[in-house]
Image (cartoon, rainbow, N blue to C red):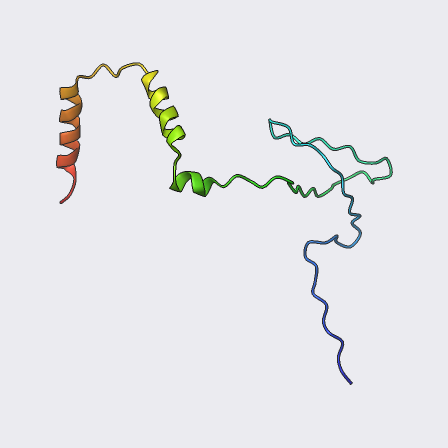
Length: 104
C-alpha cells in the first residue's frame, strides 16, 4: 500500500489557537504604525507581521556607485563648515607624519 505524501509544515502560518487577521495600516514618516482591531478580536498578546507594498531601497547600490549629485551635495555641505584654523603647511606636515608612521 502506498504511503500518502507528506505535507510540508507551514512554519509561517497560525499556530494552534491563533486567529490570523489581516488589517491594512499606514506607516507614517516617523515609522509608527497604528492599527485598530475589530471588537471581536481577543485581548492579550499578539504577534504582528508587517509587509510593505513598496520595495525597500537598496543601500548596496548607493554604496557601490555613488551618484554625482550625492558628491555635489557633499562638497556643498563641506563649504558651509567653519575653517579648521590650520594652515596648508600644518596639514601637509600632519599628513607626512602619518605616512611616515605606516609600516613598510
